[in-house]
Length: 126
Image (cartoon, rainbow, N blue to C red):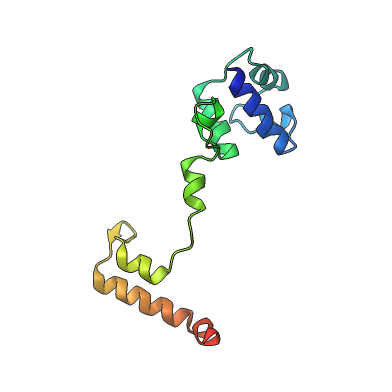
């Protein structure tokens, strides 16, 4: 658990947070002394608390425990993807609207609507 404590302290200090401020992120707030015992490795947080920490700092649980050197979680990495051309994205993927998959005609209508909506910005670029 020493690795966990060190990494937790690193994350906390990177955000310039006190142990008390970190304790406040939990649904049931934790005392400063509790955070201190986690960072020193004397106590272990619950699974729910570990998940809260990972989500709050956008890191993987594996990284928190030293099982991986990849700090960011999958969700955070997915958010860093390259921008996609919306028209290509709509044409290549199954798209749902209100729980119902759009057929090809509905996708085309959506592209037409978006083209009309952004027509001014299209014409200014060209």
